[in-house]
Length: 443
Image (tube, rainbow, N blue to C red):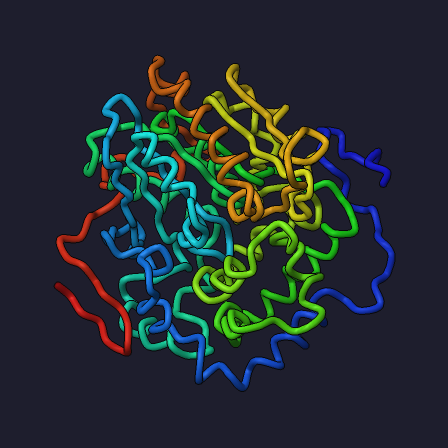
C-alpha cells in the first residue's frame, strides 16, 4: 500500500482508492441483521442484562451521577482488598458502541488485576451505553430499551460531549469517593481518543496524571479496511434512525450465522478470543454507537482526521499540546486501528515520558492481537495486563503530571463554550435508580 499521499501537515491523504468489493460491507451486515429481526421481541431486551448472573455483566449501577448537560451515567467501583494509599485511582473508559462490561466479560480481567495491585478502579457506562440516559428521557428510555427502537436522545450526542461533560463528571465522582484530584486513565479505542480532546482543550486536563491508550489513534491511514469502515459508518447512521443496532444484534449471543467473521474481524480475532467471551459481547456489551458520534467520526474514517463535532478543530493536528505521561498499547493484528496510524499519533505527542508497545508475534508475544483482543484475548491477562500494571506502578511515586497546572483554555471566539468553571462538573445523586422490567425504582 502506498502511503505517500499526504496533506502538507503530514496527515494521511483522503483520495486513495481501494478495489471494488463484490459484496459491500454494509450489505452483508444488513442481511445478517434481517435474519434475526423476528427474534427481537423474544430475546435481546434490557431485562436480560439486568438479570445477568454476575455484576460484571450488568449495567453499572453502584452509583448514578449527573453531568452538567443533564445525562445520568452509571458507575461501578472495584475496591482492592488491600488498598495502596500511594496509588492514584484508575478510570477505565470503553469505546464507541460498547459499554463498561467490555472490561469484565473475561475471566481474570483488567479491573481485577488492578485491584490486586492495590488500585481503586472505576468503570462507567458513557452516554449512549448501559442504562445511561438523558434525565428528562429516563422513563421513556426505560421502555424503549426493551424494544428494537432507538432511545430518545441517542442521535444528538457527540464525542465532544463525552469529553467535555462525561469525563469531568466521572473525575469529580472519583474525587469525592477517594479524595484524589488526579487519576490514571486507561481508555480503549474511543475511550482513549477522548483523551486527545480532553488533554488538548479542557481546563481540567491537569487531573489526568497518567494516560494509557489501548488501540487508540488520532488518525487513520487510508487502506481498503478504512474505506470499508467509512462505508459501514454511513450505513449505521442510516440504520440507527429507525432501529437499535445493538438490540438487533443481541440474539447473536446464542449463535452467529456464516459470513459474520468478515465483520467480526474489525472487533476481534476469532482464534484469539474464547467463544464464551464473544457470546457475552453480543449479549451484554454491544451498544448503539449514536448517530451524532458516527457523523463526527466520518472525517476520521474517510479522511484520517479526528475533528470536533462542528468541524472547526482538528484534534489530530494538536497532539503536541499533550505532555501527560503516556503508554500506547498497539495490536499487531488490529484492523480498526493499525500500528502505523497509532505510531504516527504517538510520535506527535509532546510528552517527555511516553512508551509505545506493540503486541504481536514479531515482538515476541503469543498472538497478533486485534482491536478488542488487547482486552479479551486468552493470553491478554498474562501478556498485556501485567505490562500496564508495571508501567503504572512506576509512575505512582513521582511528582504529579507535568500537565498538572490548571489552565483555562479558550477558542477563537473566546471562552470554550463547553466549559463553565463556575458550575459543578457533576452532581452525584443521593439515590440509586434501578431500571428494568418496565419500571423505574428510586431508592
